[in-house]
Length: 193
Image (cartoon, rainbow, N blue to C red; front, side):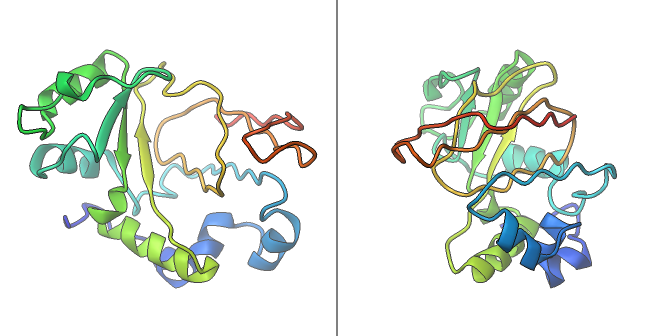
């Protein structure tokens, strides 16, 4: 595990869920949003998540860790980039090729990055204790003016944190009258900038 260039905020260490969902309280979140409807918070302070993850953390993981394509994937839109195009023969990531693909518009997906960044592991452990479940991180690093994925939905609960830059997003609520097999009906749209 690498030392993080940033130290997490004291609020995150003391009450990670409260820190993520503020300004609503945990009780209000559980009563009105959790597993019921999307909850959108627009943060105006660009340093809000500064202690959690930074570009320097991603650069350190790519450049100094012995990682494979199982931990780092590249996607432009919905299609995976073949791992052989950005890995050595051993299966290890070739950092310069990953950076080159990013420069050409590919999104870098860091799966389970909490295994390598201490601030993320603390957040996952804390949230996992609150919900009584396993929590993991998937980090999507998308270049400006690019789109990592087409519209999609998740079959599990997620917290999405925009830690840097700007993206347009829309949220929808899954229809309860349809099968749980990924049916989705738009009920509201929020734009995050």
